[in-house]
Length: 503
Ligand code: AHR
Image (cartoon, rainbow, N blue to C red; front, side, top):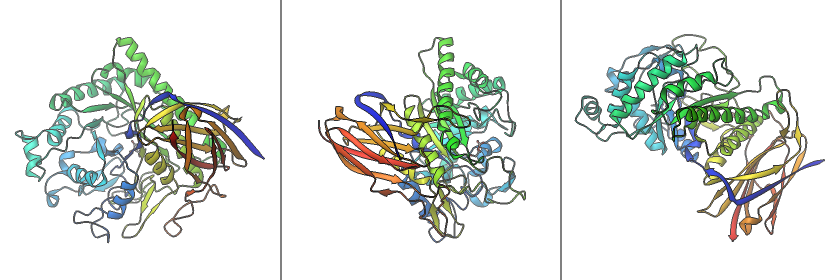
């Protein structure tokens, strides 16, 4: 049997231009993300600075526009001064977020060098756990001030004449979580974030600032936290953060694939809180959302390193399945549907730690299933999100009702004259016939229909079998006089790429 869905897309009805930073990511000093991931002197592909070229190549292909650094929970105990200056003088320190030993071989300047090679911007986080205004404003001065002051001249003496000019800064990380070093109440955090933001902006008025929202929608303080923090920081910040991780530990795939409905609700709720505070303050300013940690995280909650104080032990090295890739596809579509409000989003994380890219220390690199929806969205999802009117059969799962079997979004790249439709068929047994009315675009031709499908929902890519979950170009789509007819295989991720040939 085949199920059917219809969609009408009109090029004149738009949601928003996409901020490319929704394809951002995150690299924390956690597990083997930095050491053994992006940095491994002695690896056969390492350059003179110890950066793995195989990792750089895989990351460059993803066209990641911004990467959050250095944490995460790590940042709340981090003294940035320990990571600059001659490497031989850097301290080895106990790291309390993950109970490891931090060698400080990689710090701000090395990461800035690496980010340049990766073609990405840095989203820098400051420590508001154990530290505060002074350390944060000094870091902005060190990174962004041209010269002629103590901290900027120190940077120059470290070999960096030109300032890094980091534009986007996070005011701490998950400060509501009891696991956080220096966790705070909303009022404590809001006051500190506001005063820190003021000082950071006085050093460099061009920066953008992200205040911490709740560390998840399930936190008991969620919503009150957002309202209080924004009330105290509204004039000083540009973004509020959201963090959202999902898993299929209950092994209930229909429910798992419906989790993007939770993300959708989460985004709507946080936007509503921002608008409530805006109304209360009678402000002209709108706060945008930074979903700066999101992903499938199946090993969430598992304890920190079993043996304490190791250097870069493997941590949270989730092996992603085909169904995880479908969930990531659904989350990407949901982020794009909110392109008017979500201006930054970082898949957490990028390499080795809950990541689409895996490396073996002293060994090869391979790509997980989740790499592919990211690659497609980042490559073809540039331009403007269009409003789409979708009519599809629905199902009920354990936690959700009326889940459409299709999750879909359409993006128009006016410069290239290309319309791209991303779609997940959540049905695990039935193929879907998908009819799309795109007559407002005039004549169109099919460039390609990329499909990620697999008979085994639990199929994974591993070091020895890296190509079990692989997309192919060759899905079944016909285009005739502005009407598209596509067959979406059961449990599949689809990218239907169309070229406008005549208006
Ligand atoms: O991404 C892993 C961890 O998840 C981050 O350090 C923290 O912010 C979140 O809880």
